[in-house]
Length: 225
Image (cartoon, rainbow, N blue to C red):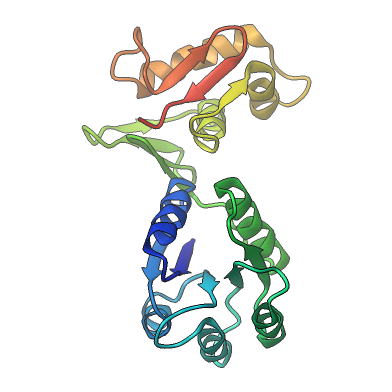
């Protein structure tokens, strides 16, 4: 899924772009209104994150030009929830707005919610975290440092996907069991065995795993470093 990030604050644009790429989205950034219109015409994004205070052409002008030719979902970014410009943007056809500052988790959740409302899946088929890229549609992963292609079983795919969707977070064993097998289908012994098989495939040295860390007494975490 392609996202166009239109934000003149370069630091914020970089943070948003990094967050979306880590979540598996393709990102194009534009830093002023005219560049945003050009990028829209070239990239044909699936969603636009649109700041209102832009040089050369403000966000309302961008929204107006986009809406003249497309119904692509637009999420307005604003520092004030009650800003008259936000209301005008929504009346002009924007689908939602977010108040700055916002958390990365909130941003991804809002994108998915908007895409569900318009009937489009916002779940990317590819996840790229740390040194690993996971292609969910093909059931395989690629280690970036050596280009090794790793074929995964259905259960291995579910487990790795759950961990990569929450990079750097410790996921409890019970949560992973429910995610992989359902509420009645697995146990901790089965999870340990599956984790052993997965590590044997994705780790450079499965005896000293660094990609998937065991957190004693809690669960596992996918390391991003």
